[in-house]
Picture 1 (cartoon, rainbow, N blue to C red):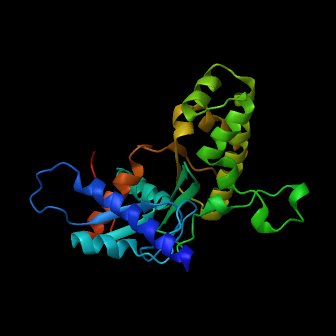
Picture 2 (cartoon, one colour):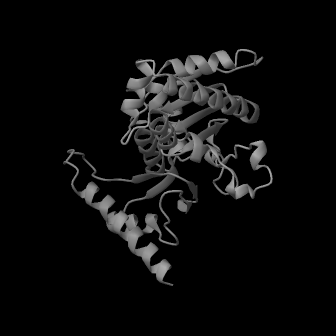
Picture 3 (cartoon, helix red, strand yellow):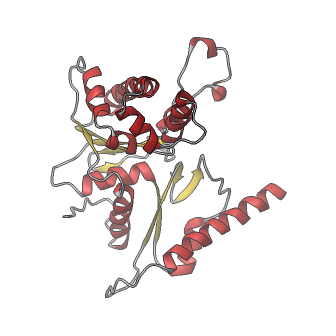
Amino acid sequence: MMRKRLIIYLSKKISQMMQNNIDHLPNFGTVEGLQAISIGMFGNVYQNKVVFSPFIDFGNFDIRQFFETQYHVPVVIENKANLSAIFEQDFSQQELENIVSLMINEGVGAGVIINRQLFTGNYGQAGEIGRLIIPTQKNERRNLSELPNLDSEWSENAIVEKGKAATKSTHYSMTELVSDYDDHNEGIRDLVEQFCYRLAVLTNDLVAEYDPQMIFFNAAIIDQIPEILKNVQMKLSDVKILPPLVMSKDVKYATLLGGASLAIRTMLHMEETRLIFHR
């Protein structure tokens, strides 16, 4: 009972912090004012509710209801990788019908669009690839929940931690990792090569699963070390039909703009209609 109360308390505090940020936004001089809100989340989202998040336990706290009560506008909640896929589709001049947006930051996720529609699966779990298990022979008798997965081994945070260990540093960041890579640090170069191999395996799996016409990569480490994508393409050179592997058009704002598109669709009651934005 105590834990449940604590979860509700923390969920309210986080929501109030978000509300405070919204209330301190500048006056944009719009004609109609606020019309809708979209919220991007890490983890499993189903029917506008956070089912599971690896970073925050929202329990039964209804974030959507909280913000609808505060602002009296429609509120949509979606997984961040899914929002990145919406961005890649809606902010493109190409006819993109089947795409995957692979996002690597605090976690690893894939936004999937099939026949121009966001594919989330039966309970919103489609694309939760961070939970994919990385099996090793020495671990094969362990409980599956104890095995390493993509989130624990190859998220941005995990990569930085590996870099920290490789350089025996007290404090380490992605900026330092990129700098060490550019300086040809042997340990960091080896780490990036391991990452490229894992990324090539994952990309091959995504092609086999979804057969997309294009795969977008949304990750700060790939944006700052472009050689990673070239390396992955080389490793997949034997794949008979490989779709174009390209960087996101906007690593920094992809989820923000994808969320804006989703909010506009909701406001216009055009949830299943593709919008085309010019930047």
